[in-house]
Image (tube, rainbow, N blue to C red; front, top):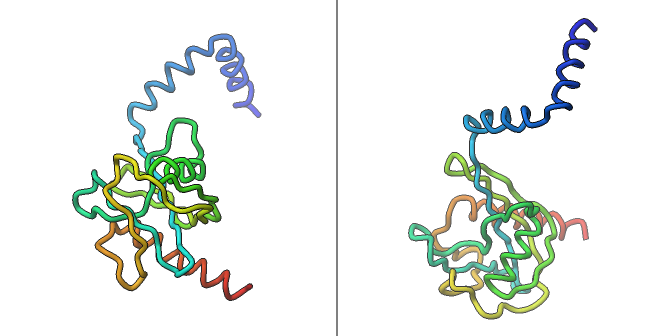
Length: 163
């Protein structure tokens, strides 16, 4: 109770001078980790094959799941819908969140299981090709993409078992 009075005074002071909080927040952010964030979508066809795309800007593992960077004030599921539309002209519905991981020390990755409402259309300039892969014949993938596919398979198996 004794600390409540000084803290209330601090609060009242800051309400009169909110710019002090803005300045303090700016200094505080200097030492905070800066994250980038991206989203991938895991899409299966009727044969149980997974959609992979060949990326222009991924030299170590060119094949991977479709996706991209999260835009300012965009929710990750919205990013999945937007990116698959932009990259593949593919309309998807996000079914469920599969996986979230921190990678490269400062990058947050989200993977979503998505259902396609149409066929793949024209590819964006970021992609060289696309292919539906059998699970047993996947190319070299980034670790996160492989884990997202494995998690999606587990989710699908559990869903089939309850249907």
